[in-house]
Image (cartoon, rainbow, N blue to C red; front, side, top):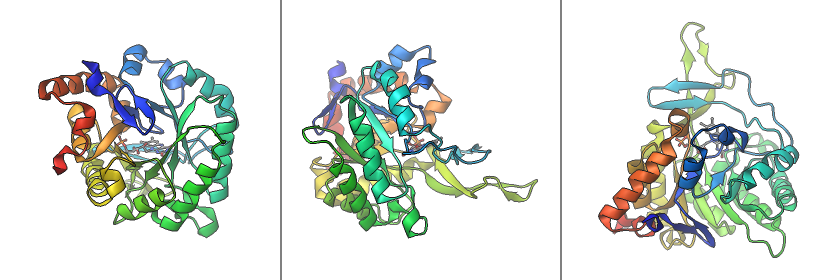
Length: 319
Ligand SMILES: Cc1cc2nc3c(=O)[nH]c(=O)nc-3n(C[C@H](O)[C@H](O)[C@H](O)COP(=O)(O)O)c2cc1C
């Protein structure tokens, strides 16, 4: 029955289309503390790590998260221990979970992306199945404008990361797009031209909150990232557009991983119907640690009732 849940990202076979979204499930220790760990792992197709950078990062000053009416705003600032400690301390623990590991990488220059990808893949014992490139980072060399809105920069980053893959290694390269742009198909096509294996979308949307007592922006950096149910229609629209307008996405030569506000199995089905091959769940996981277990249960029942597989659902709403 659970075979209906299987899906494929290129050569990467996943037992389920449900993946963790980067930055919302830590890198290893956070999962270890959960009582229902085994059932959660059974529901997962792959584990996407928190964003890793070359050097350790302290992240932004507090406050870092506030609730909105239909989600959260976060300004974590990519706090992480850096790639060396990630490889030494977290990766060995992740390997024990026996799920494909996708490492999310962030950097501030094209060269740093290449160097970081090289470091992850040189030090990983072959256990990293994929890299997810977070392009929602400031381009330090070009005055801090986000790489994600610059198709030329995206092409260079994807090429630099691909060039860092050691000869003979199969590593699945996913480019994670930002929604803070008018036409998502522009960066998507740039990533495809540079040879990305898949696209994931969306990262958080820029948003602001004001503290009315202090009469000041709530976050030190003013703008933060909006996620959760409020962003679901935006994520769905971007998946829809890429599937409808980009032949490589429509043929699933370059599959789409849908992200944004997914909290229930019905949300996941909507993303699959819009054109996603798999989905990631982020903010919902903070609210209900059982979300993956419930989503898997609901999805299996739905697929059984509809006599369909996950692969057959992908893009079906376009037919
Ligand atoms: C607290 C927090 C931290 C995040 N950290 C990262 C990160 O390190 N790298 C990344 O690519 N995306 C990061 N994201 C974005 C999520 O992976 C996801 O794209 C976004 O939250 C939308 O999905 P959701 O609505 O299911 O949360 C973060 C999101 C949150 C809420």
